[in-house]
Image (cartoon, rainbow, N blue to C red; front, side, top):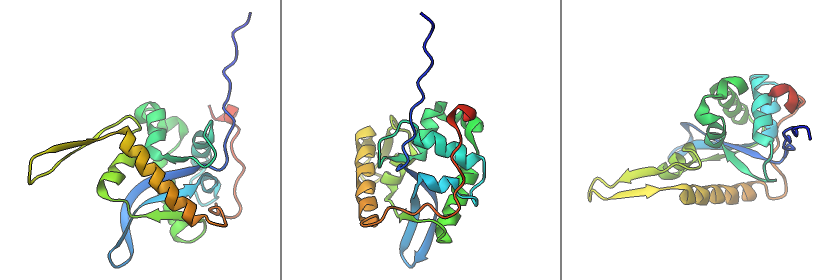
Length: 183
């Protein structure tokens, strides 16, 4: 019997990318430090290409409909980031995506996550974030279950933002890459 070919996971189109970035302040005392965008926004012509299309392919393969995927999860899946050069320049792509959303050329959910929540979505899915209370000296570890709770809360915010209409990825989107060509 010949060896079987690896099965390519089918892309799931209604997936979201969550990424943290340098904070900006659209209003006094309103910090925005994290953004959620529809995966399709990575196919926008103002996003560095073909990097955006390759990240889109990686982001959508084998996901659940409606899944919010932190950039750190992709980094984890890419051997801790060692394989990012094979996929694309994630820093440039997320900078482009943030600018696209700030210019209102796509919809995005802009969040001001608290420090621990932001650290958890920036850490990999199996990571721990340890915190020391400087006044008491006590330690607290936040782990995968806490990260999942943050993602559930982000999902609630996304559901409210999308009430009646999904996030618009922008106009003039490029076609997705063929997964076989991207490997």
